[in-house]
Length: 186
Figure 1 (tube, rainbow, N blue to C red):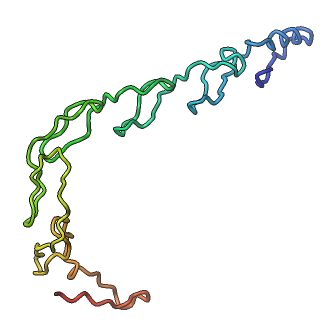
Figure 2 (figure 1 turned 180 degrees about the vertical axis):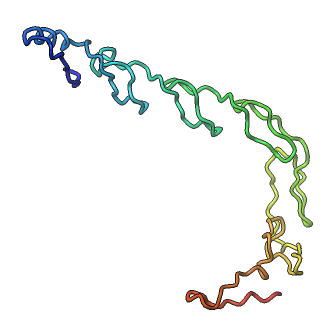
Figure 3 (figure 1 turned 180 degrees about the horizontal axis):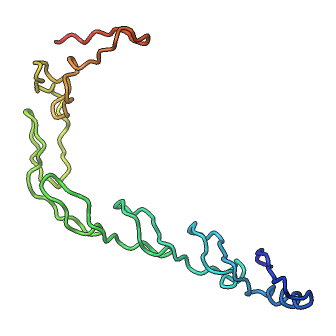
């Protein structure tokens, strides 16, 4: 056929009848095979060849868009149409509240005080504003149960175990073992 699909006839027809049948089916617009041409969006055409007029005019894509919106959710609109604003629930939350708006709407600003603080500095901005403070570069004063102090900077998360005491013992019979003594406490 002009579209590239094969033509099947019935074995019981005589040769002359088959030739007439083949000529009628070869006319443009008689192919009933799925088109399956790749559309501009990347999906495959789901219409029949006769509906597409042999790969020249394709119907609109009927698949879901699935593009990732700016909020991180997938677009659920029909492919080929402009993505509408996201209608899913907003995922944003601070330590005080969760946003109850749709993704496409603006969140209600949290007016409570920012919770960041250290012994040396305090943030005096409302929670919804970005902290304009510089990171604290003073040494951390937190102590581990063993008596060692944290070796990080103030305001950073401390490790769960003391790095000076939490070392892994490797058996002496391991050929890849190298003796590495634990660091000496300050």
